[in-house]
Image 1 (cartoon, rainbow, N blue to C red):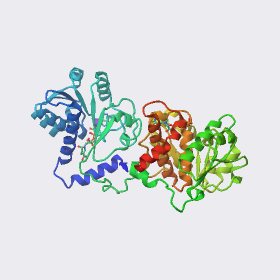
Image 2: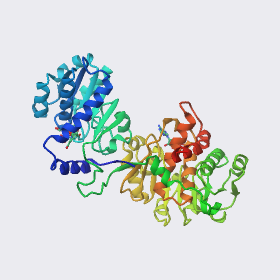
Image 3: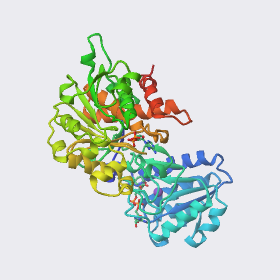
Image 4: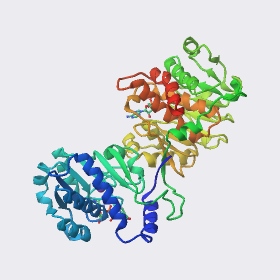
Length: 485
Ligand SMILES: NC(=O)C1=CN([C@@H]2O[C@H](COP(=O)(O)OP(=O)(O)OC[C@H]3O[C@@H](n4cnc5c(N)ncnc54)[C@H](O)[C@@H]3O)[C@@H](O)[C@H]2O)[C@@H](O)CC1
Ligand SMILES: Nc1ncnc2c1ncn2[C@@H]1O[C@H](COP(=O)(O)OP(=O)(O)O)[C@@H](O)[C@H]1O
Ligand SMILES: [K+]
C-alpha cells in the first residue's frame, strides 16, 4: 500500500522525530536527497546553472541547502528570494558561504534565461490558499522559460492535503517529497503538476506515530501485492454459485451496447455466472451466450450475490427500485444514479457502491462539474456521507471513499487517459459488480475493480487508441499481471 498522510499527521511525526535528532538534521537529510535528484536531472553538475526559487519557510531552506551541495560540485547557483527579510537564515548563510549568488525577484527573468534547472522551494506543506501575487508571477516566468523544474516536497501552489490548485502553480518535471507522500501528489489536478514523484526517506518511518496515530484523512493507493491478495480465486471447492452470481440491469432499446459491455466486464471479473435482466437480452446473448437472461423484474430473476444497475438503463426506474430494495450488495452507475432516490439508498442495509463520473457526481451534489474536478477528494467524501454509501468517483484520478465519507480514501494508481472512451465505465461497473458478488467489500471491490480496469486499458492500448470492448478483453491480462503469472 502506498499511503499519503495529511499535513497535520506529517507535522506531528516530524515534531516527534525532531526531538530525537540533532537540530537541523531533518533538513540536511531532505536537502541531501534533493541535491541527488537535481544532479540526476542535470546529468552533469559541474558548470551547470541552477536557479533556486526561495520562499520564506523551511521549504526555501531545503532549496538553499541543496543549492549549497550543488555549488560545491561546481554548479553556478542563483537564489531568487521572494521575501529577503524572512528567508531561512542558516540556509542563506551556508549558501553564500558556498559561493551561491542571491538575486531579487526583479533579476529572476535574467537568470532563468540561462538556467539548466529550476528548484522550486517557494512553499511546501506550509502553503495556504493560492500562491501570493509575487510568487504567482515568478511561477509564470518559470513556465515561459521552459527550464526543467524540480519541486521541493510538493509543487508550490498545490494544496498538500487535497491536490487542489487555486490559480497559478508550479508544473514540475520531478517532485522530491520528504518523509511521506502527501495526498496532493496522488490526486489530480495536483498529481499532474507534480510530474514524477521521488521519495526521500528522512526517518519518519511508517509516519503515524505522531498526533493521534490514526493517519486519519490519509489517502491510500493499492499496489500489485495488495490487489493480488484481494483477487477472488476459485478453489477446488468452488462452483459457479460460490464464485458469485452477479445480476446486471443495464441497457435499453436505445443503448443495448451498455448491457453487452457491462456483462463483458462481469464475466472477466470472475463472476461464476451473470444474470441479465433488461431490454438488451438479444444483444447480450449474441455476444455472450453464457449469460442467463430474463425479462421480468430483477427480484424474480433468481438468486444473485450482487446487483449492478444503471449503465444505459434509460428511464427504467421500476427495475432500479426493485434492485435498490434487494438485500444484497448493489452497484449503481450511470442512469441508475440519476434515477435513484437518495433516502432509499441511505436506507439500504446491504452495502451500496455508487460509481459516478465527475458530471454525475456534480449533478448529485448540485454543483458544477468543474467544482468536482477541482476538488475530487472533498466531492467523493461529501457524496459518500450524503448517501451513506461507498462512492467510486471516476476520472483522471479515480477515488473510492468508504460509506459515510470518513477514513482513508483509496486512490487508483493505474488510470490512463486511454480509458476516456465511451463505454469503458460500463465495463468497470460489471467488473466491480463481479468482485462484489465474489464477496469483496464495497471499498475493495471498487478499488480492485478500478486497478484492474486501468491496468487492462494499459495492456489493451499499449500506446494506441482502444475501444471499451478492448478494455474488457484485456482484463484477463491485467489479472495475470497482478498475479505475477
Ligand atoms: N518540519 C520538518 O521537520 C521538515 C520540513 N521540511 C520542509 O519544510 C517545509 C515546511 O516548511 P514550513 O512549515 O516553514 O512551511 P513552507 O516553507 O512550506 O511555507 C511557509 C511559508 O510560505 C509562506 N506562504 C504560505 N502560503 C503561501 C502562499 N500561498 N503563497 C506564497 N507564500 C506562502 C508563508 O508566509 C511561510 O513563510 C516542508 O514542505 C519541507 O520542504 C524538510 O526540511 C524536512 C524536515
Ligand atoms: N483522463 C482520464 N484518465 C484516466 N481515466 C479516465 C480519464 N477519463 C475517463 N477515465 C476513466 O474512463 C472510464 C469512463 O467511464 P464513464 O465516464 O462512465 O464513461 P461511459 O459512461 O462512456 O462508460 C472511467 O473508468 C474513468 O475513470
Ligand atoms: K515547493
